[in-house]
Structure formats: structure tokens, C-alpha cells
Image (cartoon, rainbow, N blue to C red):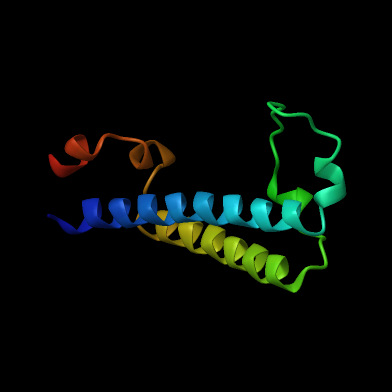
Length: 100
């Protein structure tokens, strides 16, 4: 595999890891500090949580994980910028990436 496609693949991995981390943060927050908010929802309700919903929580574990997401976002942008990688490249099929 060539260098650039490997960088793109690594960015994809980092992005997926960020999504998993965000889900974990929500699970921690809704089991703890945000438990009362979850009482307002009924089974099957859907809500689109954003990072901003948990950024001001006081739970030290949530704070550390939110910090980590910010660092992941920073690194994603730095690597994309320094390698001139477009967002569209991150969504290409893996097989198309290997052809480059």
C-alpha cells in the first residue's frame, strides 16, 4: 500500500474511534450526571446529542474523555491539512483508495 492511502485509512480509523468514544461518553453521562435528563425520554425516543451537551459536565471521567475528543479533532484536522486530504476522500470506498 502506498503512503497517502495509508494516511487516509488511519484518519478513517481515528474518526471511527472518535464516534465510539463519543458514544461511551454519552453512556457514562446518562448513567450519571445526566440521568435526570434521560427520565424525560420514553422508550424508542431519538435525540441527536452533540459534544456541547456534555462539555460542561463535572464528572472528571467525562471531562477527560471530552478533552480526548477535542485532541482527536485537532489531530484529524492537522493531518488532513498537512496532507491535503479532502473530507470526500475519507468517505471513498476502501477499494477505490487502494487503486490510487
